Length: 256
Image 1 (cartoon, rainbow, N blue to C red):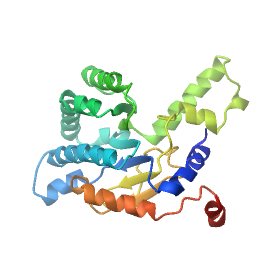
Image 2 (cartoon, one colour):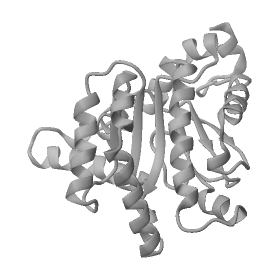
Image 3 (spheres, helix red, strand yellow):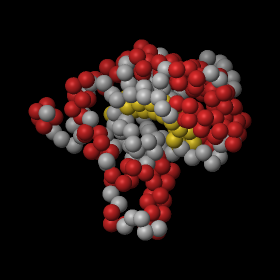
Image 4 (cartoon, rainbow, N blue to C red):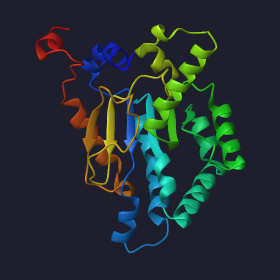
């Protein structure tokens, strides 16, 4: 199902409840938070990891079904090597801790999207272990976007479809939005209803380009480590006041 159709299919429930099923978050402002508080290294990222865990709990509390966190972009490899190494160590540390077991007990399913080619074998193994442990969970789904980029995602889907054409499994004329969606990352999930970006910037930074076709956006000046439950409630309240039309006019939406 195409992003527009997939989003429109949930329009009725969204209008009734005004609560997003799927929230995506661009967690920005960790380094600026560190400088503001005169801290060094990746202290902002460590504080941000705590905030991410708190947000998972807040989403559970608010019955959010899907949460996608932009943890590490494909462009983040361009950052200073020392910072990248520290971020990989932090990522590894989080996966090795009992956080995964805690989320498993909370009936949370964990999925990772993005390329895994540049991660260490140990890190990939821990990612796979987390996915395997939680694959049967039926509560909230937490999607972690790591070494992810929207351009990579669409290119990867196009490559898979091209390979099927080469192998005679598919005709080029049969490729449509529904097929692209099936091959896009997390294409089996509802498209994001709301994207929250912290840190004051107003761009999507190559995140979920295909999936954001009808997503609502909420930008806040708050740095990610300071994005607490109160800030989250502000984002939900802002979303609740919006009318999602999915290409229709207001009268059509209101008429149901």
